[in-house]
Amino acid sequence: MPFVLDASVTASWLFPDEQHPAALEARRRTLGESVLVPLHWWFEIRNTLLFAERRGRISERLTSVALDQLSRLPIEVAPQPNDNDVLALARRHHLTFYDAAYLELAFREHIALATLDGALRAAAVAEAVEVISGD
Image (cartoon, rainbow, N blue to C red):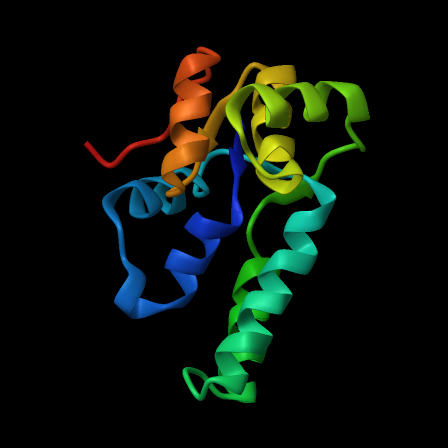
């Protein structure tokens, strides 16, 4: 069954000092399941890597390696959501529009959400969306 992947989990995969059981479980699931992401995930990940370079956390070479590794995963960009649906979730749960887009996608597709963000996780639980955990 596919699942929605957010940037917090993806970042955990890319930075060894950010390992988390839920992120490891999501990574394991990519071996047999497809992954859906909203369009902005593509930009978020690249921006995260760029800022990590600027802070001296990783090198340009490691950014290239990380992007190559991500390109090998079964990640599919989902169609654009309905603005009103995302806005409603963002307002109801006090989320950013970006985070609400992950939740809306999981809700719309009736699939699990992989996130390490506490507010997004709480909103998913409130909306009866399964959250991938490392338990």
